[in-house]
Length: 454
Image 1 (tube, rainbow, N blue to C red):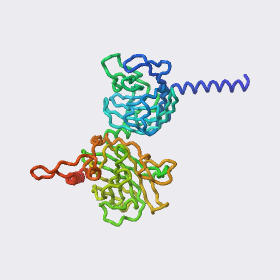
Image 2 (cartoon, helix red, strand yellow):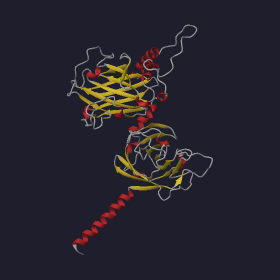
Image 3 (cartoon, rainbow, N blue to C red):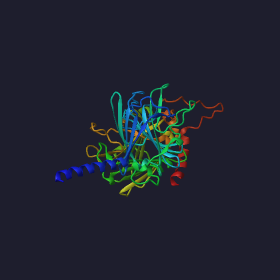
Image 4 (cartoon, rainbow, N blue to C red):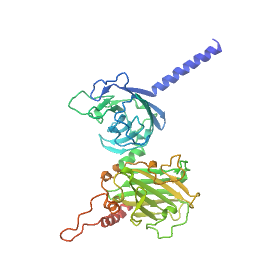
């Protein structure tokens, strides 16, 4: 046998080996039935889902599907989570463990997605997690590729199901990889866990998952972590320059925020520590912005390393009220390389239905030498930092840690600044005015001092 023939044979054998390896690390699934086990009406072009490992930290979901363009584009930001995506044209993949804990991944032909964690049937404990997802489409067909972090999976994951939805009521179509038995009186239920079937988890994970990831632990305990690790225009910071924020609620009294940040030794504001300070944004500071639904109302919180703070209410770009709204805030940043702060924010300060946020840190002299960093950096076409560019804000699932977040009405605090709810009733016939929110907030702040110590 000549050398050329040997090389050709070797190359062919290598191709076969690589094909075998790739086949054992990937699996394709075709959705051929409706949710109630009837054959779909487009068998010649079914939804095809491919699962495979990407690397040690993520797995890949590829979708190849017919494009119905019904319902139309949800008009959410491409590549970002979109709540209620299940009301649109979508492909969904669920991964379940032996304790009825599961992750739900929804992908849309228009480029939006949503990822939910559930602890028990229909019991959502987290939503709007971020993934990498891209989608392309033409008039009849769409394809999507999503990279899913392995730590979104619950421990001992071993079952799955997949679904596809399109059409508008009353002609909404629900398709299922593993359907339930036909029953004309039932309704489609994608959370019927009895319909899920075993799959080989090694297709998507290299090592078995036998413990809850930090994402799952934080979801159980109602904690949300944010990390400022880029400059405002997207350059990755050195690890020692990153700022960490932790949000949680305790006993329904308020929002607790913990800050862990580097200390740069900038000059201190000329006012006593522990009080609101107008102009804190010109000093060493961490900002947190919480944006309400409809992109109109924003709560801005500013935290300094030595106990100074500011609370600002915004409607669009108009500042409302004053800066004298009090919070409970303490730090240890007077003589340290890193500083920690803890703040208690009365829930009444939050705008109705917080659904997006951004955060920033800043230090150094004003002007071009000032260092400004961002949780979600500006887009490439922006030439200067703009903290109130809502296009740079991203989803946060506040409702999972504060159920009252779903109340569409403003709190009394906001109603003092904006006419967003009816005025309170007059004093009673006995001449007693109703208790003001300031008294309630004072009481809540007093209670919070004990909770923060705990």
